[in-house]
Image 1: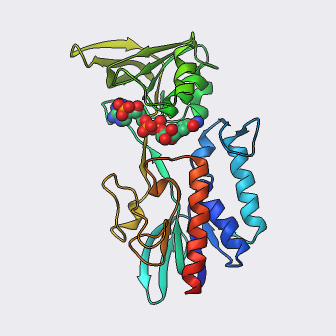
Image 2: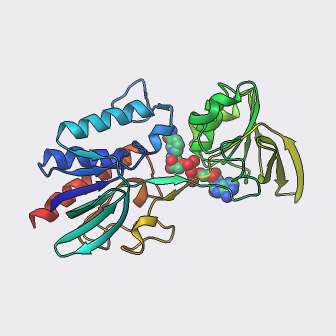
Image 3: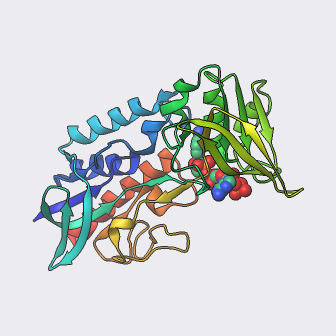
Amino acid sequence: MHEVAIIGSGPAGYTAGVYAGRANLKPILFEGLESGGQLMLTTDVENYPGFEDGIMGPELMQVFKKQAQRFGTEIKTETVDSIERIDDGFSLKTSKETYQFKTVILSTGASAKWLGVKGEKELQGYGVSACATCDGFFFKDLEVVVVGGGDSAMEEALFLTKFAKKVHVVHRRDSFRASKIMQDRVLNHEQINVLWNKEITEIKGDKKVSSVTIKNLIENTEEDMNIDGVFLAIGHTPNVSFLEGLLELDDKGYIKTGFTTDTSTSVPGIFAAGDVADSIYRQAITAAGTGCQAAIDAERWLDN
Ligand code: NAP
């Protein structure tokens, strides 16, 4: 039986790896099939302390990974499909094998939400995207919309101005929830136009996006707008489906923590860190911080 399993390879998972590795617990980290979490889909990370001039998201994740490996964290490119309680621990079934652990740290993060409107699914990858960093390049000199009013939407809109000739931000209210600095950058950008109190009700196109239907939420009217791309930045859903009722979730579906220690869950011996248990802060630095806490909590749990 191994000591510590870490599931997920974002800032929370890798930081837990650094701490559990340095505590000599020989952690095994399941990185899934795509390592690195949400920062792999980001360009400049300007607010991670220690990088005065910012750092690219994927590069930061490489540094995290190497640091965790340096202290003996074993990384497996496997997805954990289920967790079961057994005597003195947990059995983890992955895409390849079954493992047994005394403690588990859950750091599976959250995934992008979709609108659920007509045309969205069919045109995913054909002009509909939830990742400007991945797909922005394909919209050189074209016109795109970004949906959302949070920091992600601001970041995506600003990034897209490097390629698209015009970026329309469609937001369902008359004010953004994004931080002031990001709002100001968007509102003062000459390539960005904001459509307030509006939502997209349909995405149209034959094999690629050609227009969207936009509803005016004040006047209750709809009109079509020709567009080449639709980028969604409307928040995230925690990645908990593989847990299947194993532990308590909060009313938004995030893992409930804080039972005995900050990162403890409703199941003794299972700890949670990062975005999978955080619907409020959701920053790389807070994820890393809770990853550290979870590793310390797991270490103390094993000691006891
Ligand atoms: P968010 O803050 O939850 O914002 C989601 C946005 O999408 C909101 O404006 C929301 O509208 C809108 N929305 C949600 N569902 C919608 C729907 N069905 N149709 C239309 N609009 C919808 O999510 P986020 O922007 O991904 O940010 C998440 C967290 O990460 C935040 O804490 C943010 O500060 C942080 N973050 C930070 C940075 C940075 O500091 N560089 C970058 C990205 C994200 P309402 O406003 O009306 O609810």
